[in-house]
Structures are given as structure tokens and as C-alpha cells.
Length: 144
Image 1: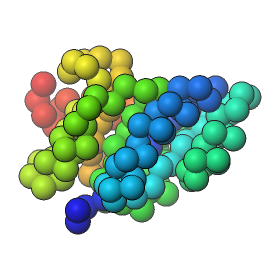
Image 2: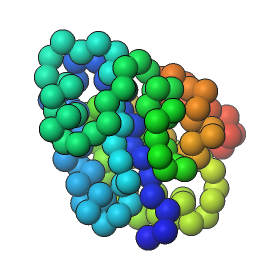
Image 3: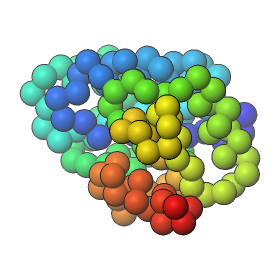
Image 4: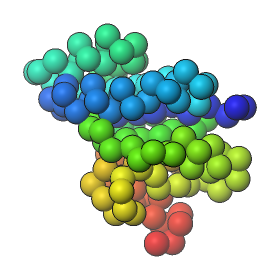
């Protein structure tokens, strides 16, 4: 596995969902696909920050743009802070990284599900401050 990704979550009072979503990433982290996890928090008052800290995530204030700014990998996988990755998501990401397509919509049980994540090169993710905005960037690049 040559390429690694940074997974980013934008959160606000998402402790329970974030814990479950981060647990889904453990096998990919062990296998070397996930380099780091960055949580961009918008002022949570629940245990979101504790969950992120205990999991070893980097925590920043603000939106998705803040998370992308500190990401160390060249590829960003932006996910909603809740479980929803489908089995085999790692292989889909690895294929996208190898093909160098540039953008990929991943996760969720169907293409436009609320759990949809976005895999993009860091340079394309830099301008988006929300997951919805990043999805729009991905759809425009994919022309869908």
C-alpha cells in the first residue's frame, strides 16, 4: 500500500456516531490505508472531543476546511460522523488511489445516501467547508 489517506469528520455534538464511525476505520488504519483522522469540531458540548482525543484523532476548530488544512496525506476521505461504511470500502478507495481518477464518491448503501463520503485529492478539498460542499465539488468533477 503506497498511498495513504487522511479521514476527516466535521462534527457538532456527534459523540456516539463519531465513536462508531471511527471504529469502522480501525482495520484500514492497521492495514496502512488510513494515515490519520482529523476531526473539525464546531463547538460540541457533548463528549465528541473526548471521543476524538481518546481515538488519537487530531482535533481542530471550525469546519471541514480546517481539517483539510492540517491533513498530512495527499488524499482526503471526508465522512459524516456516523457509521455507514459498506463492506469492501477499503478496496474501492485503493482502486481509486491507483487509478488517480481524482474524485470518488464512497460509502453509503446507494449513491446519494446521507452517509455518502467523498474521496478527493487534498488540493480539491481545500476550498470546501462542509461535506455537502465537497460532494458538490465531486459531482461537478464527475459530471453527475
